[in-house]
Length: 103
Image (cartoon, rainbow, N blue to C red; front, side):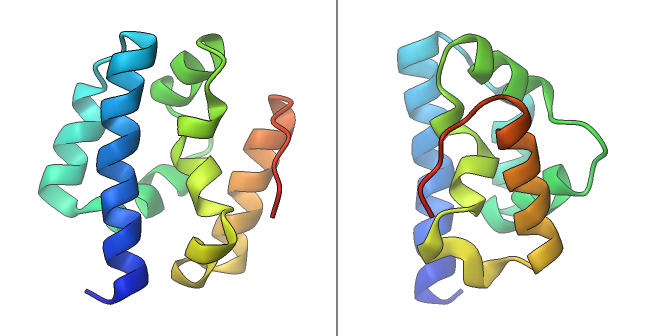
């Protein structure tokens, strides 16, 4: 695991903890995927679906789209881990929900 991937992995763990603390949201499905597959593989799996995850919707309703996998995918430091298509999917989902991102 390279340095960028290790930072992304740590970010996935942190977003789970912050969502639990700030939104009272225990993302058990997401957490199990991170434990089984790792953060990067989990993010790629979620981006490959046609619709945002239930967790994405929950975080939107909590006003915390910044805690979504998608918001992390579009961060400049993590973009080397993803394909242009995956980044575009993340941006499109965030844009559809009115997220103001800075990349």
